[in-house]
Length: 172
Image (tube, rainbow, N blue to C red):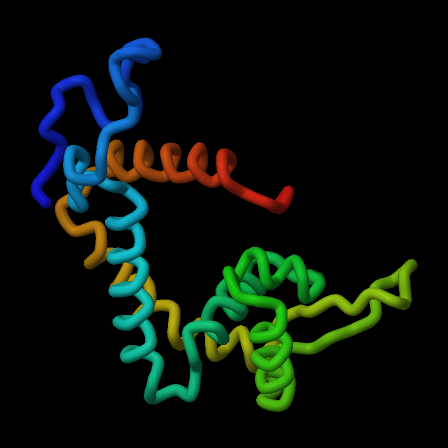
């Protein structure tokens, strides 16, 4: 579980040719602690669990917090766009938005120029709630990156953006 045993690397190995076996390392050669998807799952699972615990007293789920966070920086999104940005299934998003609308945190309005499309935006009450919760979220973010320098962080973000471009299914 500790790491790659092959000095030629995890991501890229020279093709040994048709008679020399596969160029792809085994999971055992890579090791869980050097397999990025495994580590990303662990990090995000812990982030979500910590965030859920921190938000519990405010009647805000992680899905609601994601919606508030996204809408705090961009508005006028459709449910499908919001589902992509908030990383939530459309059916879950629909239920979440119904609850948030009932709480007065978001509003849905017909899009100017296309009355078939409903845009979702944050209300003043939603913004107040997000502003109240943001310090906790930012402190958790800071704790997550304790000991990571700014250059490391910027490199990490650049790498994540490349990975996202490689795997994304949406243009947003």
